[in-house]
Image 1 (cartoon, one colour):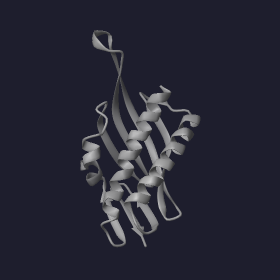
Image 2 (tube, rainbow, N blue to C red):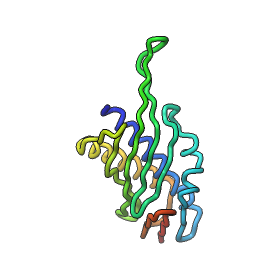
Image 3 (cartoon, rainbow, N blue to C red):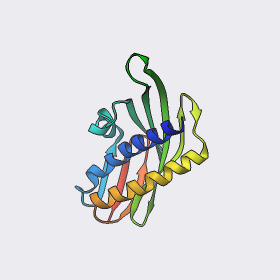
Image 4 (cartoon, helix red, strand yellow):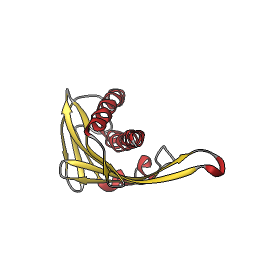
Length: 157
């Protein structure tokens, strides 16, 4: 179960967090990304792992909730067994040194919550990979991010 939460958090986190920055570099100072735009983006409609389906992002005041179905397969051939998990994770944005960082607040699989230790490990892993991605994709310094029920507004100088 521990590997599942790590995998889910990494996949879901990178998908939802990469979407906003696809438009950031193309705008002058502000970009508004709607929930519909995020959910119709390529990475949400075509997750990079075939085991992830039904991926969806629900923007809420100050946070993003990612839900997905994860199907794992253990073994091979006729003896392989599959297990399906209904997953949910809650992410909050913050700004540090002009960059957006997303923090995993909570995660569940089939209603079972992830431990705080696992959430801390995921946040450490996500923060370093996200920081490197953002550095390569953007210029300037982010000065604000606002997440509402319908959209996300990012401003930078």
